Amino acid sequence: MIVMRKVAIHTLGCKLNYSESSDIVRQFAENGFQVVDFKDFADVYIINTCTVTSVAEKKCRTAIRQAIASNPHATVAVVGCFSQVNPQEISKIEGVDIILGNADKHKLVDFVIDYQKDSQKRNKVLPMGEGDEFVATYSTGDRTRSFFKVQDGCDYFCTYCEIPFARGRSRSQTVAETVAKARQIAHTGVKEIVLTGINTGEFGKQHGETFFQLIRELDNIETVSRYRISSIEPNLLTDDMIDFIAQSRAFLPHFHIPLQAGSNLVLQTMKRRYTTELYASRLSNIKSVMPDACIAADVIVGFNGETDEEFQKACDFIESLPISYLHVFTYSERPRTRALAMDGKVPVNVRRERSKVLHRISASKKEVFYRMNYGTAHKVLWESDVRDGYMLGFTENYIRVKTLFDESKVNTIENVIVTKDNVVLEV
Image 1 (cartoon, helix red, strand yellow):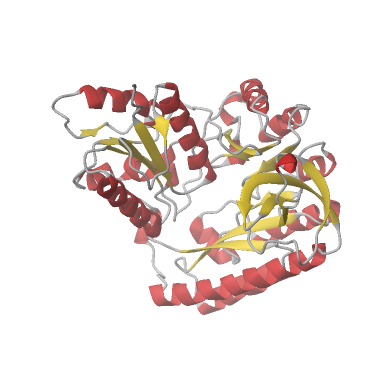
Image 2 (cartoon, rainbow, N blue to C red):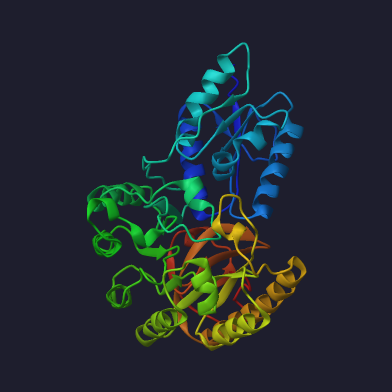
């Protein structure tokens, strides 16, 4: 009887990481490993890490300890952004065997196989590459939706952000190569593809192509019913692109547009590439052609220079916007960033209090957005997950609804009237 080696993976951070993790475990499965849950006993544990905040790094360390406790004799591999920027810290954790950055994590299965053959079993910390290669990845396992990495890296170097050091410069494949990969994803049977990247709107930069060219070509793939854009910078979301999405066959009225600060002074300190006026204009244009569009915004609270007056400006500005909900991040100092040398630091306790204020604003806006949609018809893509006898699905504008579980409805799109009773109050 052949006993298959077991592998488990734990992913932290963005949708891009989830896309890459799926690609990693596919490679392990193709090499004879059985994929199991991270809480289960495994021969290999993989932690795909995030470094966007100190909280994310703390969760990485917790996951590493959990893996070692589950099987002290397992091969433990730590990969991704935290590994890229701080491999020395991870190498001090007893029980970690392999540490790879973003440039090499897609070769992890080869490193694990070689390591397990090595009688010396020395801790392997590979020199961190610069990440100039692009590897297209997509998630599998969800029968209805796939996260598709179309871009990686960032050239912006905002003063608060460590991601360019972790992910490298902006890069992607060509439009033709990306469309070919999307057709490959479509053959898996999923109905919806979510386009992901670190700075998605910079797709095609090194090839003299644009993200707008890509989405126009993707819209022609008839076997894909729906596309979502996971996130796009406001300065890269053009009015032409908004107009195209409004009338496209498959792109949905759902936008995730980072704001980061609702004050021009703080935006300038962050070295963001837009103003509050441009941001408001983009949202106004979206709502003029897609009134029921869902618009999410990332906001960092408590960054340097955010005085009480600037924070109040931000709150007033956010209140004035047709935003559906916020992702609120309490500012966390990151190594290597220019913000470390800046004045005007906000006390941590003040940051936390301001975060609560923005969470309240977000909850209020979400309630208004849901209420506006009650009694309206939307197309819902039903998922396979079951909760208390109900199956869940998302409308085009990203409202999660439920209905009694029916196996025949999984991965089908159905017209549904959104009501207070069938909305699942989470996003």
